[in-house]
Length: 99
Image 1: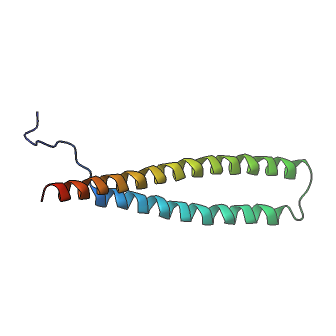
Image 2: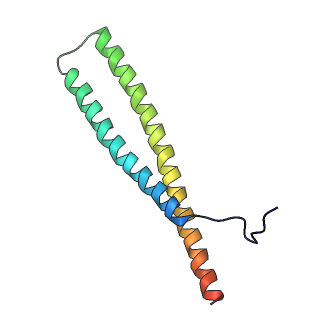
Image 3: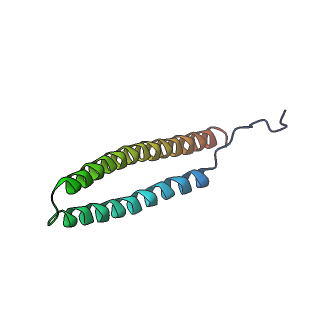
């Protein structure tokens, strides 16, 4: 049992740092994805045949996985941002109620 009457706390600075890290990850991932996609497209300017088709199929599978990952990351970032706004708002509201 805790002596603390409010055992649940939210570190808004840490939550914001997490949100910022997710945004930085998203920007870095976008740059990397664009570079890989550009290289694959350049590669296929002169490459054809069964191996080229297999490479394109694999690349599409990879891009589908990337899209799924980015959607999940976006959902996580949105949820964390919403939580930050809500927790900050509750804290501000409580501070106004109890001067």
